Length: 119
Image (cartoon, rainbow, N blue to C red; front, side, top):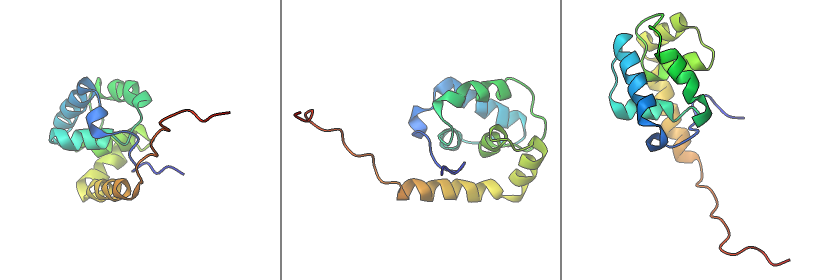
């Protein structure tokens, strides 16, 4: 079972326009965040979710403060007002640490076989 606080891709794989859009959204939502934190949060979403990120960030924030992990939480179904409360009480700092710990425990993928098996 996948946790919402488990990486789906590497932070460096997040497209720059998506990261910039989230950074701007968070600034407008009164929770500016540094670029590495934005990319770390967006790494919790699959590439297929990027269009949903843009749909959210193209509008105005419904609540504040909303940082990048709150954006992920909203995209996972949390109401913006609840995400703002979680942001204010430090919930997303715990989520960020959980994502980091889970990433450390995830074994690297097995290397692809050098040669195809003989049949």
